[in-house]
Image 1 (spheres, helix red, strand yellow):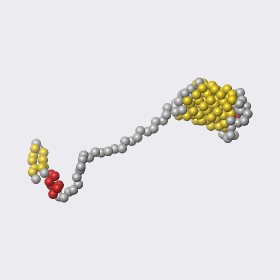
Image 2 (cartoon, helix red, strand yellow):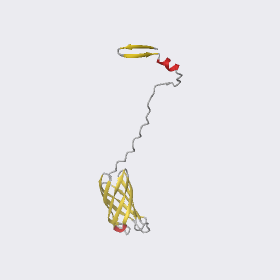
Image 3 (tube, one colour):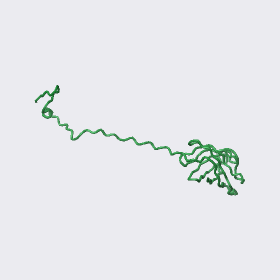
Image 4 (tube, helix red, strand yellow):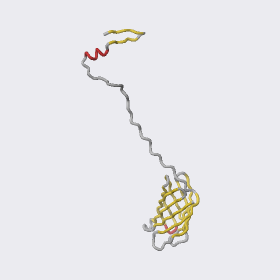
Length: 152
């Protein structure tokens, strides 16, 4: 084995010969590379659609004898949170000043409605461009349901 001193450093020649003479059989066949599985990006929450303002259209009850009548809604929105008033006063199956409280996530509307003939109900719906479709289900009667098809 040869040892050389170069600028304060010792260089050992034939280091491989020393390893071979000890019977060491572990070898590295290529450079060591650390691998890391990337963390997937979280799925972003869809931005809420904008339903603030006045809407007009029709309301139709699902029960027999409920005609399709004019309907309207007015909503206030702060981020995903929505409040508003729903009206379809010209029907035995209609309602006046039904108070809506809920959210909109992406194009999906959900919440509750209180007042009028509905009593207390759930509201689900979809916003598509300038069209808003709502389904209102009366929780007190469990079978009464009305649909509102609204536009701006």
